[in-house]
Length: 317
Ligand code: G3H
Ligand code: 13P
Ligand code: ZN
Image (cartoon, rainbow, N blue to C red):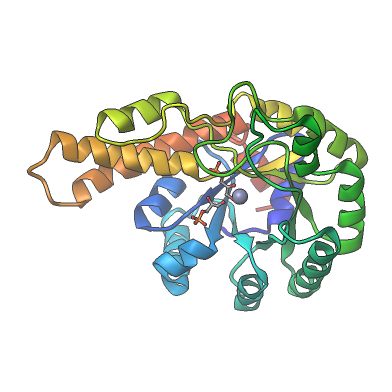
């Protein structure tokens, strides 16, 4: 059943983080639903602009509708990931989505507020909630001066003003993570101290962690053993950080890259070991199962595994 993102956040805040997973195709969608049912977790399906272009908006939405029929037990929200204004308005007007993310974080502060405010007005009028972003997501490089790296992180004072003036419902914060497989160099890592400062001035307000893949070393090595050429120094977020982040107001954790690594590993190993096979359904079946197990594992780390009964009870489903 599709629910609102706001409802999921009400149940989750301070207890667990809802996993937000991107989908692009049938196998990912099936694995995602299977994994969440397997682990009895509520979840958020994320759709990026790239995914809408790749799979087609109608086909993606059709996949979700069909999955909803096939997995009637599932409780989830449907969300636009890193939307621009036209994508957000299209999603809002379609009536299909639970929430949108407007990402104007690359704009100066005032312009970010102006754009976000416009999207919030349109979204709220139709009952959708809005995630916005403040600060610059990006790897904190070792050779960068402390002042410069701090300047990229979300500023707590600005965060309060931003939330007040935009009316957004959740905030993606820059706390040292970045998208993709290469997040941290050397000893750099996630800045939970900055997260704590943000929560202190925005108590009870849902915070979102982007760039939260853990990029398991074993996965990278297996991909390279099967012919891949990923930089072996690739490094992500320690999965044990999620519990600490939940206590500091993180209610939604975005994970995409790790799922791409699962896909790459399964397919590279399959075709390396079975070079005579050309039926794509064979590796596809393996991938769906492996992706479902991957989702179930992530949900354990996020604390969302086993929370489906509580969500049903608190939302009166
Ligand atoms: O943050 C971006 C997500 O990983 C989606 O990536 O824009 O390549 O679909 P994408
Ligand atoms: P990763 O690249 O770490 O998976 O982050 C995904 C994300 O933030 C999607 O919005
Ligand atoms: Zn992101």
